[in-house]
Figure 1 (spheres, rainbow, N blue to C red):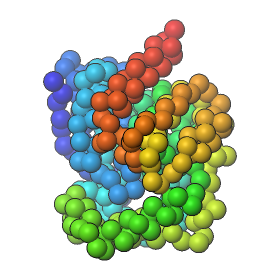
Figure 2: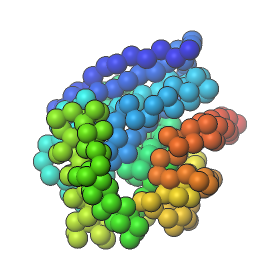
Figure 3: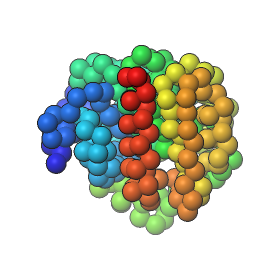
Length: 266
């Protein structure tokens, strides 16, 4: 069984919604930290955090970034460094506020990129890292996928579905995400230069049918890393492996994290 506790953490002047998970016995070791996608929130991880918390016997946190879910709105417009700001300011401040010294980061899409940037900036705080559909540069397929999502938001009820999770901040969140990625000034965004500074073991996962990125993202991450890593492309899976193939994701992540932590203790 996993105990869930909802709480709020004040981070750089904003209140962030956090869910803390603890396995039977409390769990000792690094904390699993789940980082959601660009339109995500705590709820959209579904039961994956709880399953991994129980399987690994480790405590976990899931949280809503500013402007997402039940957290306070984001202040000011996004810049080309908005993911750096999350990784280098917001996330370390949150971990400090929660008393978390070392973490295992598990990030989806934008969250995966944030995890990579954090691990590059604070290598001693990361014991292992898992990315699901992370980006390190912009591809044509990314732009095409976001343009299709913009159309879906306006025409097929996507906005209403997102509103169930983000409430009155849904429009602001959606357009901040879409407008940033579609802006001409964002087209040259690239964070491959951070990868050689990452020393923690990394599991790089992506669905073969991801409409926002090609296997070039996986290849670029693997090529740039300084430490041990493993890649896993999931057949018949799109942009959200943890939702489309949760059993495969939980199994792969659990085995990888267990092996990585055991190797670190050897």
